Image 1 (cartoon, one colour):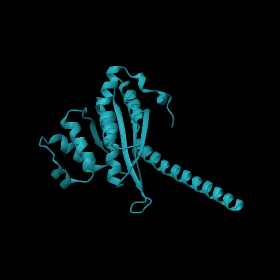
Image 2 (spheres, one colour):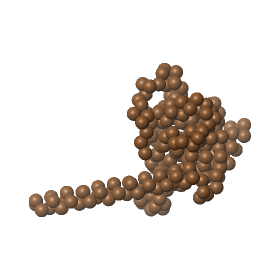
Image 3 (tube, one colour):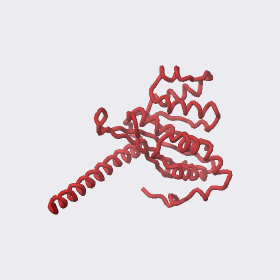
Image 4 (cartoon, helix red, strand yellow):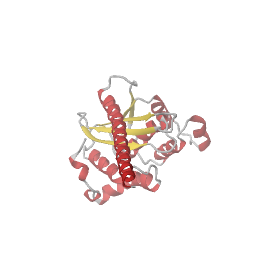
Length: 227
């Protein structure tokens, strides 16, 4: 799915807006190298599009998926869809999960990306079917005590990601969005659409890999004939 605004470059931002987006997006994605295949420019473009909603309601659907779990071919993708108040699609974002791939990591990766993108935007609702993310995030918000490393280790996995989320809150680096939990595999049109798009990307990658193998085989075969 293509968007006309995808050709926007960073020079569209005035100095104040660019400084604002750098506070969270460039601090945690570029400097911290949170995930090498995240594109700073793409995140800034989505952030800019959301700012143009001028305070109107924004809905963010998040999901993560893993295939071939427990095998050497394990693969994971996190996906996000951004909608305006009328549920018209504003933009979408997908990222491959790398290193210690797991379903929980795919889910929480989509969540932290959402928080980073909407960090300076109000009237945002993030929709997830992950009960742990919903409960744990609300638990962090409600508690005033400091979550040190020992407490994080005792409570859940993906401690680095959750430690960053905790830091966002402690340092007031994000506007706290509303989190809504929907039932997994329910008839939610928009969440199901996101799930389908993620699965479609697996299929696209498989076809690309098959084509690459076929091309390599033909090249090798021709070389043998020459020998």
